[in-house]
Each structure stands twice: as C-alpha cells, then as structure tokens.
Length: 179
Figure 1 (cartoon, helix red, strand yellow):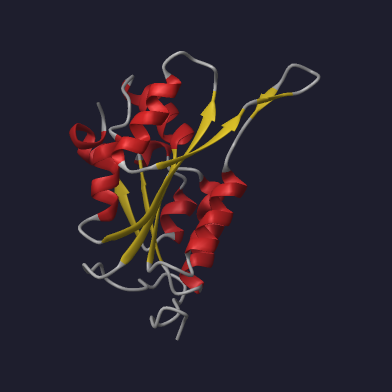
Figure 2 (figure 1 turned 90 degrees about the vertical axis):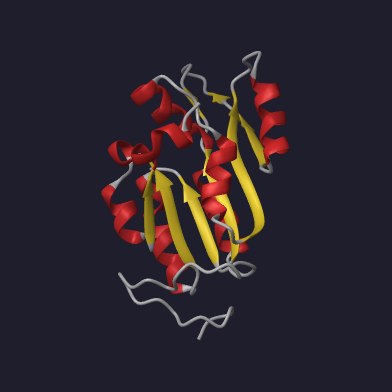
C-alpha cells in the first residue's frame, strides 16, 4: 500500500480507475502546448477547457501553468487570464547566454512540483508532450499516484504515452482544446 491507500502500481498497470473522490493536480507545460498548437493549427490553447477536461469532475487540489516570460505585450493579460481560469502561473524569464543563445524550460520545476504534490493527491495530470516527463510518470505510478497525460499525439513522445496510466489525445478534440 502507498501513502494514499492505493496499491502501488506495477509497470504498465493502471493505478486506479477515475472516480469523483480523487484529488487531482494539473500541471500544464504552457510552452510545449503553445508551440504545438501554433505549429499544427496556428491556434491557441483553451486553458479553461483544458482544466475542466483534466479535472473531469474530480476534486481539484492545484492547477499550475508553467510559462516563460518573453516580454511580449500580451503576455501579462495571458498570465492574468490563467489566474481567472484557475491556474497558478509559475513564470520564468528567458536566460540569454554570452554566445547569444537563449534557454528557459520548466522540466525540473514541474517534476519537483509533481513529486511534492504526489503526497497530497491521487492523480497528477501532465499537460505536455515532452518525453522528458516519462520517467516522472513512472515515478508517480510507483508512488501509487495515477499519472495522466494530455497532449497532441503528433508531438507527444511515445515513451510518455507508454509511461502514463492514460493519455488524452487533444488532436481528437481539437474543437474543445483550441481557440
């Protein structure tokens, strides 16, 4: 048994089915979702629908959107909109290196938050297609936490889908998840 009373997951086994009493944390990799929606559809993500479908009539404990500050004029209103929807935005500035290259990602921060929240929830929903999170899914499942992934199949790593208890292909419901 694990900390939340559920049996520990064996590899490739579903931790538990979805039920209304589950406590859920939703972690949205906003950069990954944005770039995918733009490159595939030239559209934006509907974060309200994303949150609603992620929670799926369960108890929301925390929703975090991991964003990068790019100093564009509309980003502050986007951050405010995330708050209005129910997300806590975590904002990171882009780092510019001496050679002019730029980098900013939330992989470590998102993973640390997921592991920390795993003690307080039954389900972690990762909204991303980044294969770097496949090991995180395996770890969450080992802890007895259901790991769900939502992303666009064309840009979601196969290893991430394989590591999760469930995968929602946002491509199949483009009218729901895109503005």
